[in-house]
Length: 489
Image 1 (tube, helix red, strand yellow):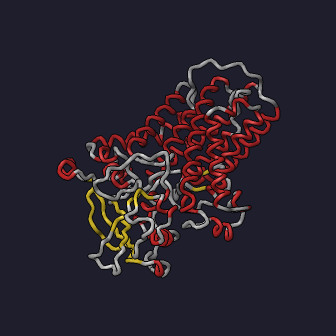
Image 2 (spheres, one colour):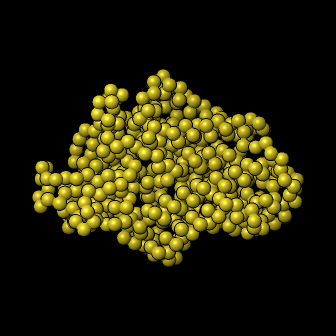
């Protein structure tokens, strides 16, 4: 079938595949370096406990069949190795069926991780990576030209990512309609980056322009993806520029980068295609069958997209084949941070020697400037942002975090920037306090050198010792409210 392939997109496919493999590599590296404290056998939310109560059909995963920390580490590092091989172009050296199987490996491994990752992996970019990664299996290699239907479905994903994010904003917080959300967003976003302070202090009229431009990019430009070239390339390029702007303004894991990768698949690069034979019949049949399945599964995401009660970042099948996306349906006006402290004193009085734990990415010491971590994902730091919004978000894991800090657990402390206690002398008590954070002004920055100013609000967790962690009724009842680009499920 001559219509089946689009030879002019061979370079677009090559760039897309290598960039996607880079995102896979970051995702697996994040899993390999953080899993023991989060979901390991002695983690805050252990996988063995999860698979005991959740059947395979609801969360298909290799770790439903067997779990040990060693097996998980092997799987994560194997994912890193396969991803690195794909970055290097190993798939182009294999026959078509071998390349498809090679691309299937990181998808299956990462699906296994996400489906047992619980709240630590309940972010929209996890499902997005899986949905894009599954389509990449059927994109082919140098033996065939890129299939038109797969390229179309990649644009369909990009459309849902952008248009869904635009709709959730219009239907959500009124500040998006008033063009005022960026008066607060750079200060209250989950994890500010090194330039976020400067973005926050841009003139307010410029913030209005930014929001208006965002609405155009997310609500109008996505429709142009399905127009002839070069309009589709221009639309995708505009999305790439917008995403790079977001990369500069904050740390959003690989959300912006996977969106850029998707947009690259719609860009037609000016390069003469190499001669390739026609696609074999078995390949055409498999690709068309898969595409028909994915179009059928799109019904529920489309219905959600058109619903007035639109939800964001939801998977409708356990394989995460077709999902719904969205980001920042509401924006916090005030930033709160949970500050965790410990003391080795015999009595946890207010005048005891309380020492603060320092996290890698989330704000702590007002004088410490934020760093750039994305696309690497600091999962504990992100969940601490949710915990500050509502203790109900932290109910399943915060008590376990405190317990491991009281034990000076090595794997947990590796997630932090610095522990105030030596390895052989754990704290006797740990407490948590809630602070309000705000960016300093230019004058305050010059006078104090601090980019943050913080004010004590209330006690979040009373002083707790090891024997009393499980008995502390620290979490207030009530339902959390969704704010961020990825809501813990």
